[in-house]
Each structure stands twice: as structure tokens, then as C-alpha cells.
Amino acid sequence: MIVIGLGTVWILDGLEVTVVGNIAGRLSEPGSGLPITSAQVTGTAAALYVAGACSGALFWGRLTDLFGRKKLFMVTLAVYLGATALTAVSFETWWFFLFRFLTGFGIGGEYAAINSAIDELIPSQYRGRVDLIINGSFWLGAIGGSLLSIVALDTDLFPADVGWRLTFALGVVLGLVILLVRRHVPESPRWLLIHGREEDAERVVSAVEREVEEETGRALPPPAREITIHQRRSVGFGEIARTVFATYRKRSVLGFSLFIGQAFLYNAITFGFGAILTTFFDVPSGSTGYYFAVIAAGNFLGPLLLGRLFDTVGRRVMISSTYLLSGLLLFGTAWLFDRGSLTATTMTACWCVVLFFASAGASSAYLTVSEIFPMETRAMSIAFFYAIGTAAGGISGPLIFADLTSTGEVADTVVAFQIGAALMCAAGLVAAFLAVRAERRSLEDIAPPLTTKGAGAGSGAGVGSGT
Image (cartoon, rainbow, N blue to C red):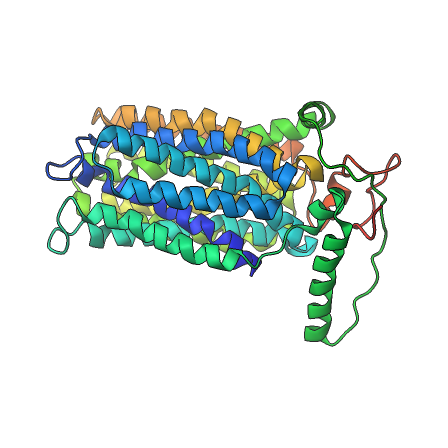
């Protein structure tokens, strides 16, 4: 229920981003119904979507820590649905830009609310693999978006000004289904306990324990330890800032590095891959979806197959190695592209290998910032690092990438590849030194709640009872 209700929203995000990248060529053609260029779709509109996600993450992230995970992951999905529906009826460029921004605004809130809820509801020994697979499910949406764009852009089936609108409409339908499932996902008992709702927290935990005992036929052991907390309705922004930037300074550097590297790489390539195929390999705009579906599959297989190792081999080794490997492989791809050794097929194959490792690394960025900071700051920390890192890499990435690829010069595109590769390698080196050994550890063990009573509390395996 948790995986379907919360994790499937990344499928929608992947659908959104991929559809826009693949329909860029069609939107810029006469008869699309919008007076817009391909560069505006992959550059301006993409940057506005990311800017909306960044601002939405900060806005909704603070509210998630104040009012709970469940309320916010319902509200943010509703915002996404409304904005996507209005994108489908775009009639002018400014309208399309506005509702791409608002769609991102809703998705940004999802990042904070969903990742904090997932980590607080999933057992510690499985937290890494589950978090990676859920964040990696973005690429299932990307596969769907790629294949959907092939059908939607077929003018034998739909007029040029109708097909691309149907792709956004399908996103609304899928979102409504997720909304129905999500109503049954419980609030985080950790959040309930700390905010003075211990009876509600006990009710949620007791229901889970009862169901597990009925399924296994065995009584659960008592908690190994317990911690005592002082319940507080809210934690001030100043205290959050001091905690993140003073108490956990090295962890903040780690979070920034991971997010900036993956944000530049993914937002640039996701929005711009279709333009590369049409510009340098003369792939028809209606066929780019086939190629993107292949690299999207590679992206999903990365977290799916490597996720278990983040819980067994460990966070530090896996985070640093996935970032470094993807960066080095991208440097190799740039070299082959510069030599003229690649075709549309072999370019896609290279990217598939690069993104197999990069996707696991990118998903681990969300895992990292959602588990290495105290409970009271969790959603805001996710929002902050996502917003700042993505603003640095995710807004500049599409703009720089669109500008470089639009020249039609191979050397300019090679530079874009090399920037992404360098940032991924740099983040990998930072992780090699600063990554936290969080595998199979309780969240309270990794970062004691700010409301914990007594020095050194929180070193136990979990929360037993609280006051």
C-alpha cells in the first residue's frame, strides 16, 4: 500500500518530463496549436518546470513538517492534477509556461512529503533498496511517456494539435487513481508522536503489528531500547537552519554535492535527448520515443538491481561508486561522440549504460538527505537540498544544454556532456569521504530527534515509547 500509494507518483513525474522532451519537435511544428519553438520547450519550459519544483519543495516541505506527511501528500497531488489538466488545454505559449511551472510546484511538494513518509514507514534493513526502487520508478513513467508519445504523435491517429494534449490528459487519469489509493496510507507514527498525538501514533503502530503477527503467526519481540522525547507542536526555522548547517555541516556538503551532480545530468539529458537525436542523427520527431524508452529501461534497472547493495555493501561504497562510474562512462561517451563514432543506436546504448549507474546514484541522493537529518527537519531538509541542488543543476542544465545543442555543433554538445560528467565525478569523490553509514540503522540512531531528552539519547535501535 505504501509503495503503490506513495511511490507511484514518481511514475507520473517520469511521464511528465519524458512526454515534454519527446513532444518538443511536434510542438514546434506548424499546426501544433502552440506558437512555440523546440528550444523553448526543452529550455524555457523545462527550466520553469524545475523552478516550480524547487519553489514547491520549499513551500510544501515546511508545511509537511508542521502539518504532517499525509495532509501534504494529498494536497500536493491535487495541485499536480489541476496544473496538468490545464497544461493539456494550452492555447498560448505563456499559458503553457505558467502551468508547466505550477505542475512542477505540485511535484516539488511530493518530493518532500513522500520521501519523508517512506523512510519513516519502511523497516531499516530494507529502507535503502525500497527508497531507491521507489525513486527509480520515475523511469517506468519515462518508458510509458516515451511509448505514449509515439502513439500520440502519430498524425494518422490524432491531429497534430490533439495528440500531445492527450498525453497530459492521461497523466491526470493516472493521478486520480493514485489519489484513491493514497487515501488509505497512514500518517507517519514518528510525526504523530513528536507532535503530541501519541494515541494516534499508537493506533497506527498497533494496527501494523497486529497485521504482521496474524500473517506470520508469531508474536513480535519488544523494542530493544526506548528514547524519551519532549513533544512540541513545531520547531522554528532558525533551529532547523542551525541543525542542518552547524550541527550537520559535513552532511549538508554531501547533500548539496549529490543533488547538484545528478540534477544537472538528469534535467539536461531528460529534457534534451530527443533534440540530440533529431539534430545530430536525423531521427524523426515521432520516433524519438523508441530510443528514450531504451535508456529509461536502463535507468529503472539500475536502482532495481543495485538497490539491495545499498543495504548490504553499504551507503558510502555504493553512492560514491555509482556517481564515479557514471561520470567516467559519460566522459567516454563524450569522446566517442566527438570522434563521430556513434550512431543513434550506439549513442542510446552508451547512455543506457551511463544511466544504469547514474540512476542508482541519483535515487540515493534522495535516500541520503531523507535519513541523515533529525525527524523534525526531515521534510524541510529534503525540500531544501532538492531545491538548492536542483536550482543549481536542474535549471541551469536544461538552459545550457538547450543552448549548446541548438547550435548543431558537435563540439558544443560534447562540452555539455563533459560538464555533467565532471559534476557526477566530483559528487562521487565527496561521497567517498563524507557519506554516512546509514545502512540497517534506525533513523533515530543516525540522527537523534531534536526533541530527544538527555544528551546522547537516540543511540538506541528505535523508538519504543515516548512522553
